[in-house]
Length: 163
Image (tube, rainbow, N blue to C red):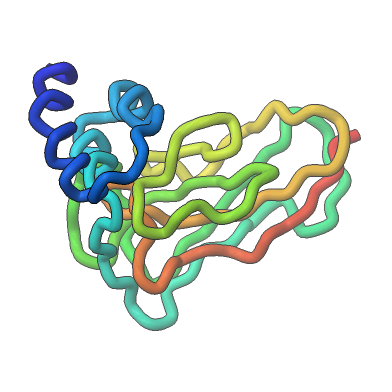
């Protein structure tokens, strides 16, 4: 299924890229869920609107907190509906934690790796096993395809120190 989808989408992606050099993006596509496969093949995807006043924030830990592992992280959402990844609805999405990294491109799905943690089942709490030291965390809401909204619904960056 993935190979057949890639065979169809890769020529379209090359056309959309207008001769840009090839990358390892095809390898990333193969590891993602089907909705993200389609999205990654088309650079510069449209973003769904977020309503005025929508926001996400960390309930815990607080900015500057000294914590021990595992770190319990809880997050809140206001002004939008929490939904599973792949479940499209207006003014809805799911959480992503950006761990020790900056913001991703806003016109592509948020990647999945150790620095971009997805909560596609609508989770609002997680226990993170973080190494001792200083860490930054930021929340970024993604739509059904993991694409940030326009404007993006994101928290401030917080810093925690794991003892």
